[in-house]
Length: 413
Image 1 (cartoon, rainbow, N blue to C red):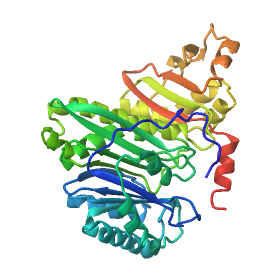
Image 2 (image 1 turned 120 degrees about the vertical axis):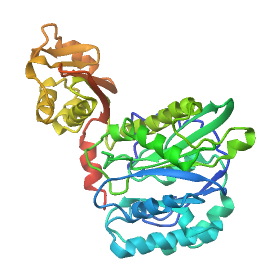
Image 3 (image 1 turned 135 degrees about the horizontal axis):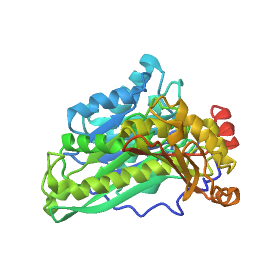
């Protein structure tokens, strides 16, 4: 794990609301390192429901396969997360390890194994010894408490340099409900239907199908709009849990995501998910600059997204930003290779408020010193107008530094 905290990290972990109906505990199980907290258990009261989105990688981890099936059952009583070992590309032994983990957790909580969801993060291809959870999860159940967000966030970290959390309080039909969650991720970040790992909890009594609809809709412009290194993980998992406890305070149970009473909740949930997604980018391995890339004027939003991703994933663009160089020529090249409709002579490019190129050439008002000064900031905004239509999309990324190579060159050692 990296030791220096990212310069883009928030000043402090946020003060998150307690979500009634879920309790947390963490422990050191020796999954990969001795003496390091590497297991997190969330215990949910009876009646909890959940929805999830997962990687579309054709080589998913064993926990991803397990969760996809478990969430079909409707009821969820526990979440087990370990760091240090992804339990991915581990064959039948990996599936057996997940089943054993679920059995251990179910016995500790007092529920069915099918009511346990599991996530693992860390090295790919190493067998996971599930026997290390014996006794550990029993102890976690005994110690579990509400609101332990910082420890929860730390226990799921791998190369992350800071725990990531976000939350909100909002009203449904005049009743206050809470949303809070954590995420992990720093490398192998180019999500496809999810993020590395993220778990969000609410006490709002919302049925699983409605949770699923809101989650799936929000992911497209949040976790699926970030990239650190263009690599999609085998373990991408994002789960949204509802304990339903706000019903006792008079909050109505809602089964339809289109219910107008969910308008404020939907917006707050999106804000929490976006906050977590952007924190993942701000902890990009070796990152020194947080970059927003907005493409406008494309033929469609989908086209704008593909162009923005082409720019955000370009090693040449990312290293130029690391060097604080406003090399707009590299952006032109990334637009051109995206495979989307574009016209060289209609392109316009901005670094922050400074237009550097227009109508296929350098802007006549371009001032090198002014733009260079802007590039020294920690947060960089780049806008590219294609000049062909109304399509628009924003992708968030970070720069590519020598530290990224060092972290990943030493990852398994």
